[in-house]
Length: 173
Image 1 (spheres, helix red, strand yellow):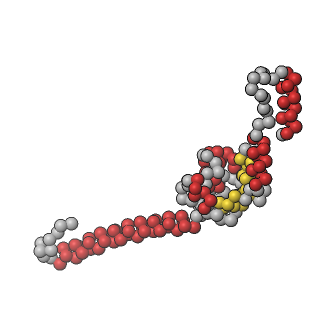
Image 2 (image 1 turned 180 degrees about the vertical axis):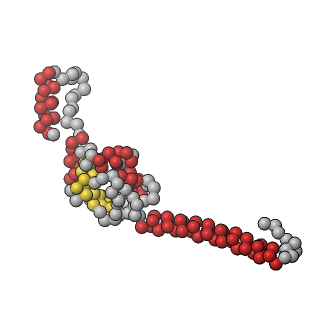
Image 3 (image 1 turned 120 degrees about the horizontal axis):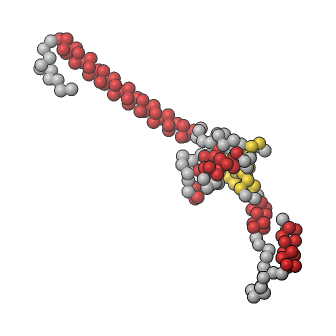
């Protein structure tokens, strides 16, 4: 837009020049306002933490290794809120309490906040409180311990020994 004002001799040329300049300024102002609106709208949404799905939140706070595992757990009824199954698309809100079944562990968590991205293991306590009693962890640890112990050099168990081992395993399940 290199128009010399000296070449603008007619009044109509000068009016057209200023109209064009105002139109350009108006376009730039509209673009800046749109950019600011989008930027601040995203900041407000991030601050309020409104749009986080439960499957995404479970993955973000490292309860499940992948998001698809979290979705499958929700669909299978392993994630509950107030005893009701939770769909993967349910939005997470602060102070909600969820019961999550991971293998044989029944984990109870209370939501404190929602992260923007998947967080490291050290930052996880900022986003949920673990309300699972210690007895539950002890029960799972007891189930995972092995009761089979044979002395070295004794050899393979006989058929009778194997049946006794299976009987003991069934008793402790």
